Amino acid sequence: MVKMRLLFIVFSAALLVTSCSKYQKLLKSSDNELKYSKAVEYYEKGEYYRAQQLFDVILVFFRGTEKAEKIAYMNAYCYYKQRDYILAGYYFNSFTSSFPNSQHAEECAFMSAYCNYHDSPISSLDQTNTQAAIASLQLFINQYPNSERIEQCNQLIDELRAKLEMKAFDIAMLYYKMRDYKAAIISLNNLLKEYPDTKQREKVLYSLLDAKYNYAVNSVPEKKKVRIADALEAYRVLQTEFPAGAYAGKAESIFKNLMKENS
Image (cartoon, rainbow, N blue to C red):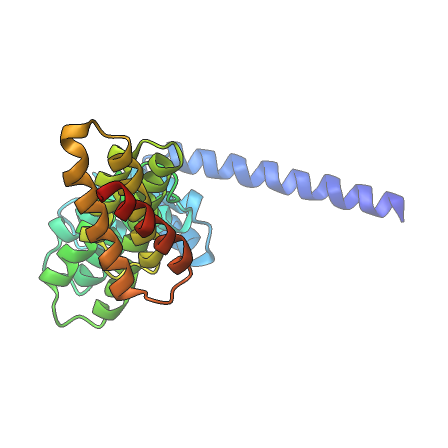
């Protein structure tokens, strides 16, 4: 039994070496038609890395021919299937530029934006790519307003915006926890302006009230009155929207302290 397993391993290794050897010879070959047919064959088998290497080699050779569109289309998907979203996005975008009248133009325009979506990092990291993804999805919507993919695009945009919202919320709360109340007030106000329907609205409004209260009571005398009035307005907004909310008790305590400071 052990001998049979060893023979199988040796046989498999020999086949792999032979296969690799043939593939390397194919890559170095000057027979571009053979490279094309084998690349398509690899693609259809799901061997995207091998197909992509061959497509990359023959892209220039077949430029301007009938096969150019098919090569560009499959090559973009080769990168996508390997989860190389940066290059996949580049090649999908290149396809739409090179073949704007293709039956695959809309699909590739969407896939280019979708690759940007995949390239968006978690909310704790820099969100430049997330903003770029939103812009590219919106561009697709503008270019293809009647596309069946519009609903999906809107869902993806909502998901990406939620990530930006979480980033903004985390930054604002970090300032708040650090007791940098001036920075916290600015960040919390910006958060409410940008995302007025945030699910964290009650917590944001309370944090804003508490930040304004602490900022006011620690102010120099000539600025204290104006800042107390600002904090009282923050209390009014919180009380109006969430009169019996989770922070009602704490907010009431702050309100009483503000009234004492204001007397």
